[in-house]
Image (cartoon, rainbow, N blue to C red):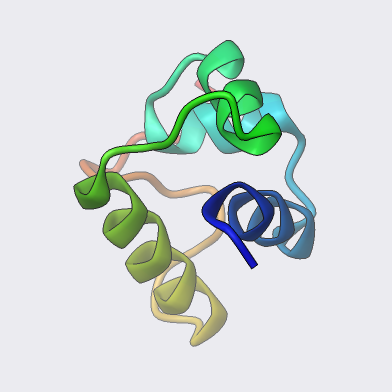
Length: 75
C-alpha cells in the first residue's frame, strides 16, 4: 500500500471529510486531494505527525476535535 492509499484509509477510518481532515493538520483541502490521488506526497514530518496524532486519538489520550496548540478543527 502506498502513502496516498494510507492517507485516504486513515481519513476514512476516522470518519473525517477531506475538509475536516485537512483542517486538523493545517493543510489546504486541495493538497490533501493531491496526496490521496498520488499526484504529490506529503513531507515525511507531516506523515509522522498524522500517524502520531491518530494513534493518540485511538488510545483516547486526546479528543478527536483537538489540534496541536489546542485549537479546534471546526474553528
